[in-house]
Image (tube, rainbow, N blue to C red; front, top):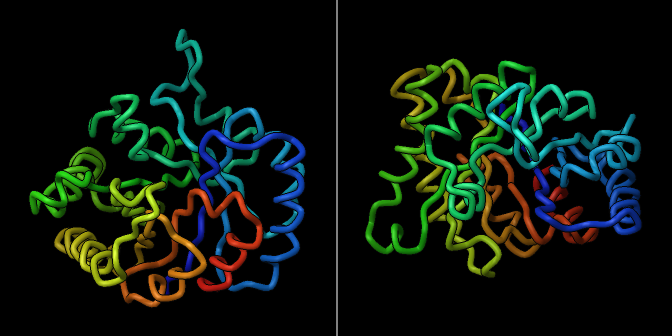
Amino acid sequence: MRRKLVAGNWKMHGNFQKNAALLNRLVLGVNSLDCEVVVCVPFPYLGQVQSLVGGSSVLLGAQNLSEHISGAYTGEVSAPMLLEFGCRYVLVGHSERRAIYGESDVVVAAKFAVAQANGLIPVLCLGETLLERQSGVTVEVVSRQLEAVLNLLGVSVLENAVLAYEPVWAIGTGLTASPAQAQEVHEKIRAQVAMRDGRVASGLRILYGGSVKPQNAKELFAQIDIDGGLVGGAALVADDFLAICQAAG
């Protein structure tokens, strides 16, 4: 059985005081839950968060990484650097990285490869825009994004990775794909992987990301192919994030 996973993406939010208050609540609140909990925090706070969650069941993740290991890449952060802060997970190809910073499928696949090669678990984000959804090409878009990784690295890499379906139109908008809409895409993603390897597909965790809230988490997580959530705004509110984790665990 696939163990549920809830990952909080803080995006560009936080300060030392708020981080400590939030994490102190989380560390106490998730210990009894039967799900995996990750916080993906801004680079400057990795050290603080590492010290606050050390020894707890809360795992540390990063929001991005460079496709390079080292060199003259001013402003970039490498996989080995993230490992030194105790990161276990790293987001790859988040829709904001794709849309705002122009990360192509090729770049995302390269980041996935370097993350995994250096001992990090990549969380590969897939999703369509509102225009693409309205045009009926959701499956084609998500499939293309996933194929970029599969064609480069092969299906076996998904044995040590997580996928996250995040409809771009539902991120930070208050809109949420219905459980049926989300399940439909998750099912298609799993079927795409199963065409290459059924065993890998059956063990693959696929998260839903897109305005996950305490009010909708339980119904979303009850879907057969939804294995947890990639949580944005609600991850910054201790009570909300804990309620989502409880819905998973």
